[in-house]
Image 1 (cartoon, helix red, strand yellow):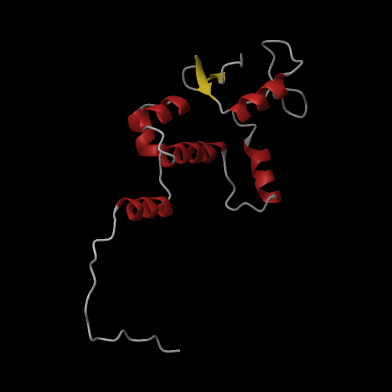
Image 2 (cartoon, one colour):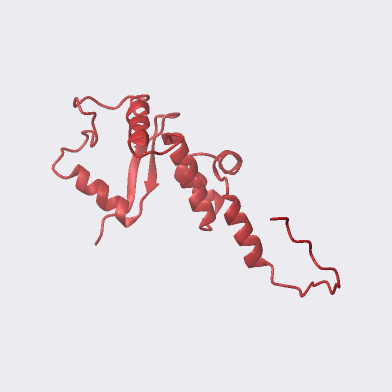
Length: 146
């Protein structure tokens, strides 16, 4: 029997554990990263073996974005927005997205579930079938001056 695809994490706000559902790939990644480590030890540490603090990610992530030529540089908060938006665009119910990111449905809908404009256009075109609206006209459209 396979292990459950869950990961326990502490939230920054309540400091109380919650479960995060992972894909098989995510579960396998964390299982490999934790292999050989004693239970209760941190899986990821900084280069100097110290634990990561709340703001320690900013500079390394900004430097990585610079090396990868990603502008503007992203942050973990932007990755959170992207994650929630992708789940919404894949049709995951808002309640599920909210639970996964640890926020209320209202906050998730308002702040995190931004839809890409191209996605909105694609969904509208997919949902509405043609109605046969055409204009019979003798007017020739003007061609732009070259």
